Image (cartoon, rainbow, N blue to C red):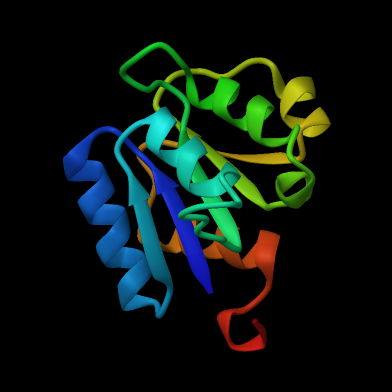
Length: 128
């Protein structure tokens, strides 16, 4: 299973990548919203499909992780992609998460928490 990871904090990105790789997942990491959107939406060139996307809510730059998700949901091939939104802040718009079919994972999270949530939204790795 291939997991996309949009996280602009390099230390967190590297930690999550290592955890996921240790669990047997292939990881495509994106340091900013533009790189992620380009990789996942540009079907004609450089398209990198993923089975799950993990997105940080607060990103450096002009776009939040939530805005990235809203844009992605407009593409037919991404409309039902499982997405996990991570945040260290209090996220209160739970209804919007439901509308966009997004799971929330609050930071700091444990290895067990992220793996359990991934399995709950995608199923066990062995079945993919």
